[in-house]
Amino acid sequence: MTLPLSFYIVSGVLVGAVLAVVRFRTYWRRHGVSFAVVAGAGVTLAIAGLALFAVFALFDLDLERSQPLFWGWVVTAATLTGLGAALKSRRLPGLDLLLAVGLVYLASVLFALAAASKAGVAAPPLRALLVVPAALELFAYFGASLGYLLWGAGRFEPRVDYEGKIGRRFLLSKSSTVLSTVTAISVVGVTLGVWLVIISLGVLSGFEDDLQRKIIGANAHVVVHHRQSLPFALDGARLRQLADLPEVTAFAPTIDGEIALASQSNFTGGILYGMDPVRSPAVLTVLTQLATGSLEPLVAELRPQAPPAADDDDTGLAPPAPVPGLVIGREMASTLNVQVGDRVRIISPLLEVLTPVGPAPKSLDFRVAAIFNSQMYEFDARYAFATLPAARRFFELGADEVTGVQLAGADPERSDAIGAVALKTLDPEGSGMLEALDWKRRNQTLFAALKLERVVAFVVLAFIILVASFSIVNTLTMSVIEKRKEIAILKTTGATDVSVMKVFLVQGMLVGAFGTLIGAVAAVVTALLLKRFGFGIPGEVYYIDSLPVHVGAGDVMLVVFAAIVIVWDFAVFPALGGSRLAPVEGLRDG
Image 1 (cartoon, one colour):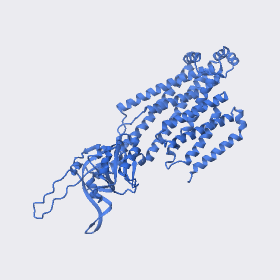
Image 2 (cartoon, helix red, strand yellow):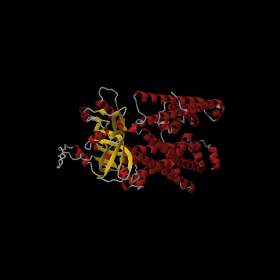
Image 3 (spheres, rainbow, N blue to C red):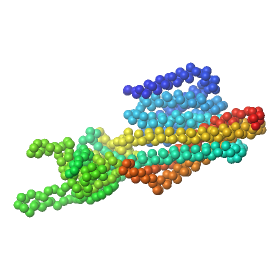
Image 4 (cartoon, rainbow, N blue to C red):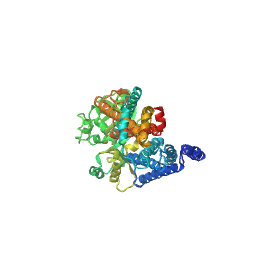
């Protein structure tokens, strides 16, 4: 197995990081770092990662479809690790956790690079690792600060009594115009950050769903075909058994092959699909998106025809066979400059016929019966559909030969299960001659790139919330400076450092939660308005009439949860600083 160059680079970085930690251990100890805490947190995260890998391997889970389990495991492991580190050290071990997360993350990158697929950085494990370090650090620090708040006073104190009331009074105090202005700016910043992240993810999801719908509509959920892309004889009895499968909602045999098309004014290349005009529209929704014409001429070709009568002249020759119908895309019709009713000539680049002047490519005339508009340039410019008998006659196949069977199911996300049961039905002997190829495997690289784009967009846009959280740090820092006298009075009356920390943490969380709530509500309302009224974009450029938006409940919950944790972690810093203020300093400066 050949490992990528990045594997050796990350290996060097990991070894260098470990040596740096050991070499400068005196420096780390001077800054309060406990190597026992670092080692304990690192080992705990490593064990949690190995356990997660074992669960996925044991139950044969797919990371792409088990995202809730994966991220739930990561968040829980990081939070519990931080909680345990705080309980062990009786302090807030921020730098300890940073070192532990960094070392464990580098080891995880090595593991992912060693098992990386051909998709490269777009592979699910590497794509997840773009977010894992931030998630581990955020939730580890969240767990550590939570543990310090609950047990920092030497006993379990889960309640927030007078601290909450004082925190609200500090927040709503009008003693300082500057502080009130900064607080308002903090709320607006968090609101805009949450709104922008949710809307951006909704637009990316909308484009992905639109592209997925169009790809499935032109290529079916699953295609069972020969492994070597050869025609094969299809048993009609086995084909009818597909109707009894609960996973399969529609199916249709198909024939496909490369062709060239020529009209009186132009020519182009494409793919000719032989299909059943009665069954195939239930599998290929593109056949229902007809701009002009209809499938009726193709349906009429399948009806039993009376034997043609001989001509009235004395030659005794039958009249010419009727010209078969053809359904082409809008872009192909524009290129060939044809309309419904016009003739086009289909030419095979592989088959030949003998003519008086020698071999020539086989060709056959078709009449345009309909023009479809899938709103995908590749399909509209290259796909052409004819009846199965016409395609068999052109490609010189037998009466029961096909190149594949197209299937549709109720849930496109379960296309692999649909393909498995269909393959077992069509090839019960398990000869291995056939294989089931679903839409996700056919477009694996494309959709992996789209998901990578969403991950990168989420990471980049999350920095907007981070920047907005700095304004909360400013708000709390100014509040601590302004309330030094009040802090001193609280401490002289018996308030602990943890209690003072709770006061300012309540103040920061009220600002963050209020901004997050407004941003989430505004984003959902914006998405509903965009769906209701649309946002027009040039259809000639993007092949869609309006901006697609799909804001899922999962995306909203993810952004809200991430925003709350980010605000919490940023609010801890100034709150911790305020809790360490000595009463003498506060009374002297106040």
